Amino acid sequence: MYPSNSKAVLKIEGDLDKMSDDWTEEEWEASRRLVQFTRKQNGSVIHTSFQPVTLEERAANSICISCIWWEEKQECFVTSVDTIYLLESLVGVRFTVEEKNRIRRNLEGFRPATVSKAKQDSEEFFKIIMGFPNPKPRNIEKDVKVFPWRILAHALKKIIGKY
Image (cartoon, rainbow, N blue to C red; front, side, top):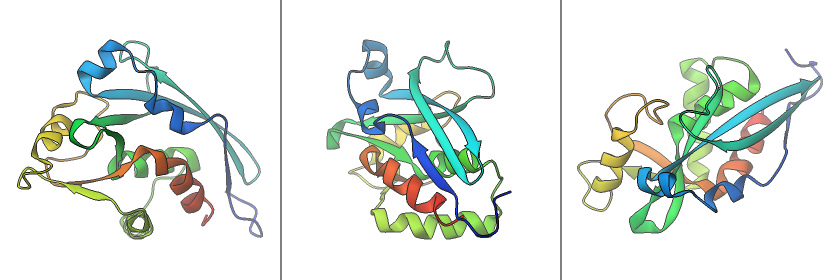
């Protein structure tokens, strides 16, 4: 997959942080913006670009994650499920359970918040996340870890650099 002597490098074209700016009325009403990614690879360098898309514009089988507005925190977040899916898509490999667990441990350094229906301070946000149609930023209806959207670019580069 990669030359044995070099680690993968992620080059992100554009400022991923800008995806939390200038939302449409529909995005505000839905509490999320869909962000579609494309990837190209030259040797061990992975190039990715991204753009906001609507559900209707979203290409079939595209790499798409949710930038989710958490009203109470006045900030955008991304789920760990979407983060791992994006990493798999960018690297072009399905991770094993062990690799996913290692990635989750690496992501802990970015201080995720656990969103749960049992926690009063995140119950409403939990309901919003669980209510999203496809593409769903979660796997099953259980507690989910979320990260501030603003750390996503750094987290992606850090974890891909380990491959």
